[in-house]
Length: 200
Image (cartoon, rainbow, N blue to C red; front, side, top):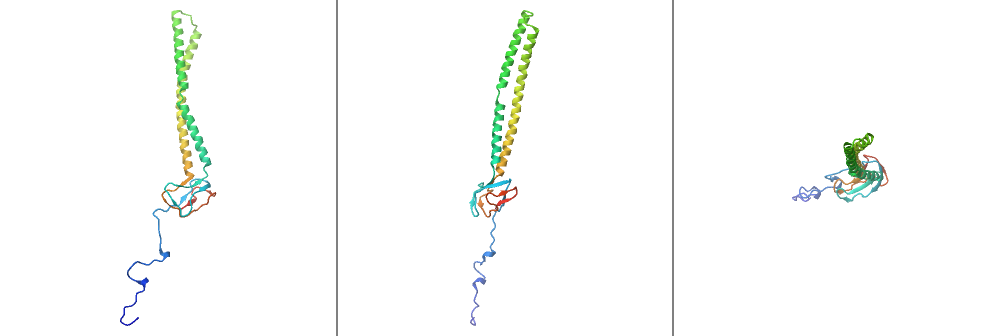
């Protein structure tokens, strides 16, 4: 340093200008940082992403063995369709109504014949026709009750279908938002249990 001159300023110690950072001092935090864990037990049959990959919101990231869940969903769909078809089937009720109409006319005809000519129709024959009329009316009630029960069975089957759908959803791992895969915690074909972290 020459006498009378201002002391030299080392650039890294300069009081003004852009600050200088070392890479180790930089910390970047994401607005959302989530570890996605398994919600069902089974083999991780598909892991469709890699570290550093950008993914869209709701994109499928991985799949836990869903064969049983798919089969259960299919069974529930078939059961629901069968129950609804049974609930909508009014053939038995219609037949019972028509049978009751016929039985009533047949009974009234014999009652009228007996009124016009007493003893033309035996008491046992009249009782049989009264019984046939009563049976037809009861068949109407039974057909209606069977359809009500079938309707409730359809409600049960619909609930079973919803439950099967939830089980299937639990085996499909999706991105909760658009972002970047930071770390894979599992590998394809590994067995996972509920709560096991799959990726971040």
